[in-house]
Length: 352
Image (cartoon, rainbow, N blue to C red; front, side):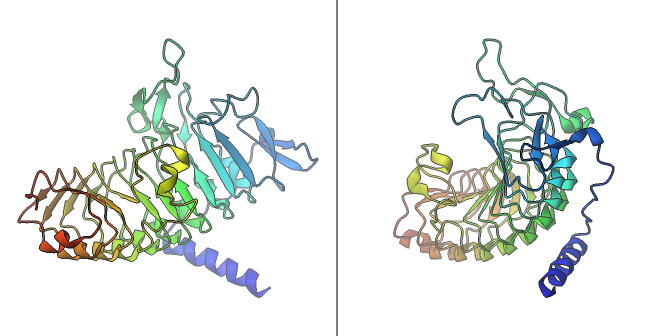
């Protein structure tokens, strides 16, 4: 009884903290309901009937294995239906590439009702071009087309492809991957509620606004990837709290495996803030990230002096700060880093 009361209080306090109530799942279309194969009540998601009681995983990755002949297939649908909030026992929602569609998207691509999936541990929606109103998935010769996004949701006004602030209710999440989706809008401050996260990937989107300082609450994160967006403002000093960045732990960060999911990359950035519009100096607190082997901050509008505290980052192998507006000489402390192999200070300061 006591645990139930504490859970309710935490739910209420969390909702109040970021000013968003989890919307109720009322007015469910009866046509969305079904009887699952195990005889329990179900809900139709992407054309399949899933048991509300028994479903713990929806997994589909079009980049692995052969194309299925039934089930999700290559094109599961245009948006995630709000009815997915009924599957409250889900621990894994993995739809990599399965939501790309040539049909126009309508409404919220990621519904606010996702907040009901409080048992979710893995949320992976990468490579779905969610922000594309019409997406040409196949090229004329039948091969896979990449990033054929002629009109985004923001431009069309008929769909919304943002990160809903209600995502802050998913406090059991360990992996949140939304990369390569043309998502727009800001990173909600409620991201700071996801204190069990190990991986956060928002790279290759159209996100704007600042990196919320609440990101510093994510002290268990091994990988933070926000590169290739339109983020502005400074790198928050709270990044220095994320001392688990770069700590090797499978499956969250294992660079010896060749990158995420065996993609055979030479190295995998544990911190990637590159190709944004970030401004101001690098906060000295970054020197707390002593397990980080790659610091990738290139092609922003960062300025000021490179902080000598970066000399504390003993694990650094690759340091890419090029394409910024730093001034002065690199601090002498960087010359003493034992493992540094590729320092890049171009476009702003001279090398050693």
